[in-house]
Every structure is written in structure tokens, then in C-alpha cells.
Image 1 (cartoon, rainbow over the protein chains, first blue to last red):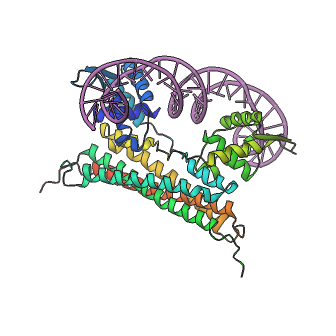
Image 2 (cartoon, each protein chain N blue to C red):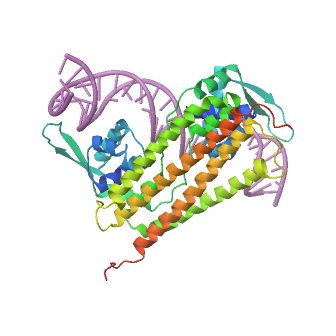
Image 3 (cartoon, chains in turn cyan, purple, blue, brown):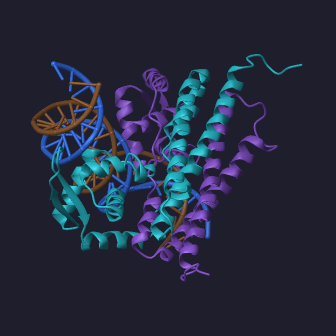
Length: 190
Length: 190
DNA sequence: TGCATCATGTAATCAGTTACATGATTTT
DNA sequence: AAAATCATGTAACTGATTACATGATGCA
């Protein structure tokens, strides 16, 4: 279960509550791993019961108290073990590609809107990642001499940027193809 | 549940047995959706009980009989409904990225082997996709005038190719980063 | 007064993986 | 004789999603 490992990495980078983790899974670490708050709370309880996390009640002013989790020894051991064990290269689960192939049995032109919507989402994500890159790594405000953690976070972010760029270019290709299919309804005969 | 939809698309492209579907999910449609045979048999039974698929017993020589499934009216309706409904742009689940960030709390150099292994898998997949592209779409042996189905299958395959190329380039970037972190242990001072 | 944000959870369901199980035919 | 391929399934478990549920604070 990689959610456990993602939580361990995130809590090692910075301790936090379930709520804060859910926020991080919407940005930062969420670029390459997603989880809902329900899932996060369940896993946090289990790992705390296990002794892999420790919890500290933090009182706050003007806000409800929170439970701040951090990684305990056995948690670090879980992570180290996983890091040293090979994992399967992931296979894609790409709904939109299924839809595109399915469009052959429906109206391909009807997919144009949907593909455009997806392209816009990826454009937005790209802009968001690029802004984050400048803020955290390449801009003048970025924290000075990068350590290993910084370098590794940066290379993962570059992966997200490359992924979004590739996806946008591919969706352009898909749109061209859909337009070609809808465009010239008459044959190419002389 | 997109597995249902992927099965419908695949059976519309060509009727087949659970076993044959499992084979297809290892190639072709499996480039962007994976499923185990256990899962496939379960979903096929359900959809047949539902009336969304029809099954035909086919006797074979020299091989066990098989059940050939094809899409019935209600199955087509399920697919059409899904095609017209917007879906969420998918978010990544990228274990290797979690590992890379986790390496900050372990030995980054220990990840080099793992990343190289993943890169090799992606190189192999790319070669496989490119061979398929020539065989089915761009080569002299490719079926002549492409119809809509062909064009759509091709654009999806181009997406797979773009994904693999992007991933290989990114893994090169990751390896550079890991080497830089391990390579010069002494500071950059004058 | 109502809405957004912060904060935490339970219950039910659905999807996916792993392990187990069988048996025929074909190739080495 | 053994291994690979063809062919189909069940059972148990784990992971993920969806729906439901509560309650405080701060702002407009």
C-alpha cells in the first residue's frame, strides 16, 4: 500500500494533522499521489495504533484542536524497507483513452468538448506547477543552497511538468484527429 | 467503473472470450487500462447476467471450448451514456515519485538501480509500441484506407508513445540528479 | 444569518489484488 | 515427462470511493 509510504514521506518532510495531509494531497505530494481525507484518517489511526506514528494534541487559538502526527522509529523502518524493495513499473489507467477508442462506436465529434475540457485542466495544472517551481526552486525568493531533499522534490516536480506538457501536446493531437474525422465527410476521391 | 467500459469497447472492436480479453489487456487496450483475468471473468459474468452482454459457446478443435462474449443493446447504451458524461481528468498514482522523494530520508544512491530498471521497462514498452505502430498503421503492410476506428486507435497509441518517451527522458533527469547528489560529496566552495 | 474554512470521523459499498483451484492440449 | 498455452473460475482480503455525520470559528 503506497498510501502509507506517501504519508510517511510527507510526515518526514513535515509533521502535520490529517487535515493538513489532505491539503498536501491536493497539491505538492498530490501531484503524483491522491487520497481523500477519509482514507487518510483511517490510515493515520491504523499507523498510530501500530506504533509507526506518534500523535500529539495541539491546542490552537481560534481553531479546533488538531492531532499532529509524526513518524516514529518503526515508521521509518517501514519506509526504508519499501525503498529498498523493487516495485512494479506502473501501468496506466487512462479513462479518456478508453473514451477515445469508444468514440468509434458513437459520434467522435461529441468528444471534442470533453477533450478540450481536459486540456484546459492540464494547462491549469502546468501553470500551477511552473509557478511552484519558480517559487520553491528557481526564483530569487527560493531557499538558497538546495539540499538533497530540495533537489529530489524538484526533480519530481519536473516530472509533473513534463507530464502535463506531454499530455497537452497529445490532447492537441487528439483534437486534430477528431476534427479531421468530423471535417471532411466526403471521400478523398479525385 | 471504467473496466466495464473498457470491456465494452474491446468487445465492440471484436467479440471474444474472457481469456482473449485478458490477452488484450496485456497489449493493445492494456496500454492504457489493465485488468487481471479474475477481474475480467467476474465483470463478464455480471454483465451477461445483466443482459448487457450475450454469450455464445464456441467449440474448438485441439483446445478447450470457449465462451465468446459480444455486446448487446443495453451494453451499447451503457457505453453511449458514459461517453456523453464528463469524467474527471485523472490524477497520477506514481509510486516511483514517492520513492524518489522518500530517498531524501535514506540513501539516494541506492535508488539508482531501481530507476535504471524502470527506465529499461519503459524503453522496452516504447520499442513495442513503435513496432505496433508500423505493423498496424504506418507500415506498408498496414490495412489500407484508415477508418475512424483505426484513426482513433492510432491517436491513442501515439499517446502511449509520447508517454513512454517523456518518461524515459524524465528518468534520465532523475538519474542525473541522483548522480549529482552522490557524486560530489564536497562543497562547491572556491 | 448564512457561507466558507478548519477539523475529525463512521458506514456502506465498490473495485482490485492475491491466493487457490482445475483440467485439457501442445510443444520441448 | 515436464513445461507452456488455452481456458475458466472461487474465495478472501485490501484498498478506495461515496455518502453520511458533527461541530467550532470567522467573515460578509
